[in-house]
Amino acid sequence: MRQIDEQRGGAVPYGRQAVKLMKTSLSTNWCARRVESGEEIADKAIELGFDELELGFHTTVFQAKGFKRRLGEIPVGSVHAFCPVPVSAPQGYPELYSLASPDADARAIARVHVKKNIEFAASMGADTVVLHAGRVPFSSFFSRSLDSQFLSEALREAEGDLENRAYAKVLAKAKKRRDALGTKILDVFMKEIEAIVPVLEKNGITLAFENLPYLEGFPDEAEMAEIEKRFDTPLVASWFDTGHDRVRAVHGWKKDAALSRIPAGMHLNDVEKYNDDHFAPGGGKVDFASLSGMAEKVRHVVFEPGQHVSERELVAGIEFWKKISSQGSKTFDSAR
Image (spheres, rainbow, N blue to C red):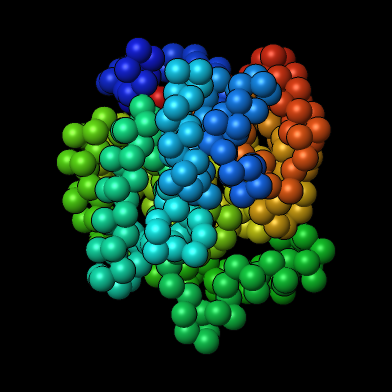
């Protein structure tokens, strides 16, 4: 495990005891598509009381220059790939490229862009790159009848009841198919990580794989546990998104698999029922009280509201989180 070397803005090894760093970051995705200036976004984050920024995947090259000019006032803690938006892309998206693709050429392109993001993060003084690794390919007609969209519709018909006989039956088939597809890609994915670890070591950056809000999302909880076993280094880590976790749990996609290391960080956002809403904390049904213990131990606590969230709603979410976190945490075993 690691703790932040605050003077460098990077990271150094540490033991099993995590240091409490209750700093909070703001994901620039909240307003990057409506505010052109990186300096203006940084100034707003400072005004709202944030300690750091996470540069989101909507960040433009122009905005990145502005954020760099504000590093003396507010540092960048993490970068969410792919950032800044590649010149070849029409707009920002976290799955422009997939390290988990079954296609070797697609993985090679993803590898190039992940390495660029690692180098960019280091140039901004960040210590973590957050990555959506991709999705297993539910590509056949049979698979598409069991994908996340289909299951969400089926769950609505079952009125959210995971024990509903019809939903439980189709979910079991879908999970069996998902596990088989994940097994096929896992070893290939491990090799992609092996190729990237030297770049992580050179730049002092952690690559953190985010839990994704769909059944096809890769890696799932069990696959992430296998990845941690294979790579005994804090440079390869998980990243916990509160809203994504809720979506996975509500649909019955979440696996009860214990990770061996603390996530590198977490995104704070809320959801109501079945969708990845990205409300501010307190705007949905995520049990933040049960997650405050994790927040005390991760390196980065990042508010990640959607661009639809108003400033008033975000401020309410900040106050909600302050109240929750000040009431004391439930146990989170950092050595599990």
